[in-house]
Image 1 (spheres, one colour):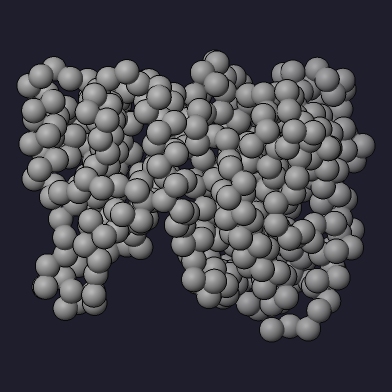
Image 2 (tube, one colour; image 1 turned 30 degrees about the vertical axis):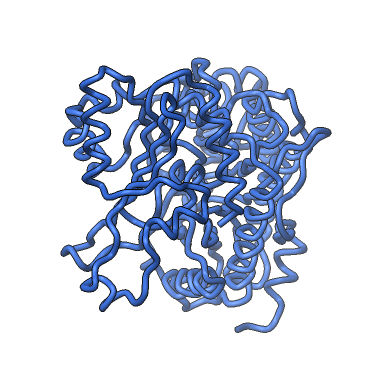
Length: 464
């Protein structure tokens, strides 16, 4: 964790936004896979981590604005727990590490909240995303699960977003640790892929790199020869000559900060001529988006720039036709690029998405409902301290092609005869992580091979 001064400062800055009331931060609990004692890997709530720093289950953080007090509530482990877990520090000992002096059992927290409710004090909380937290809010505050989103504090949500969205220097250092491990995960895949290998073998190796760093995965691995499926977590296919593997994987550090990168790797040692043509268009769009990043530029405009660059390249190869500006306005390019250019990143890979995409990614402004553009998670003006991904792609999705073709959709912009020739091509994307600086942007972590020459150079290295 960071120094206790970091967490004290964060809580102090948050408290300045409130004149009265209680700020309630329930931490996450353990989540059983199939019975109580067999749990999934524990992941603490990110906002709890940001303000209270402790990566332990079943804790609750409270900032009492009126009393000018901060609390961490939780039940200390018993001897029965310690037999299975080993020696454990008390909640009080742990809390000292993040600058919290007031600690007590969960039962005392329930009394505090009951007293606050009797006095009609405002209790601020963030919209819950776990069922167990919704049940806690029912037991503690009498708020039914179906009402918890509506009764969440808009003021606290805005305050947390406005604080967490700007990454400090020490956060950038931690994110770069995650990104560097992420690069190693992708390099491991590039060095091992060969025909006859399964997607599962590659996923296992990539996962092992993250675990060996004393971290974990920042999200479930995508390792697939069916890259046209955007979030494909199936790993049952066997790699064959002539295919490409799309790898989207990232590492998470012990402190919860993550990396998120994608690579498209030929199963053969080199890309085919067809693969090179499409890959280079995707890469050109990627580089155009990267070069356009700077403070004050709307990310939505950079998305449009990337989409136009992809469409122009696809027109040159005969997949698109007509006026490209009109094609972009009408969304014809979304047949090949139905997703967003990138998203915020930090403690969450889609940073703070649980707090609301419109508030986080659009600063409260309305977002587009157009197919493709509606999937862009980030559209607001960029500011120094924002950490984000760049990941344009080109995807040939047979089901989408069939649907649009049957509707004769965007017939003035799409050459369906040419598109049909590539219906089983798959998908391509590369993804990198950046921080916006005062004067532009900075690539985070080590450079991941992404040009055709660089990827083929890595593929030619000895197999492991």
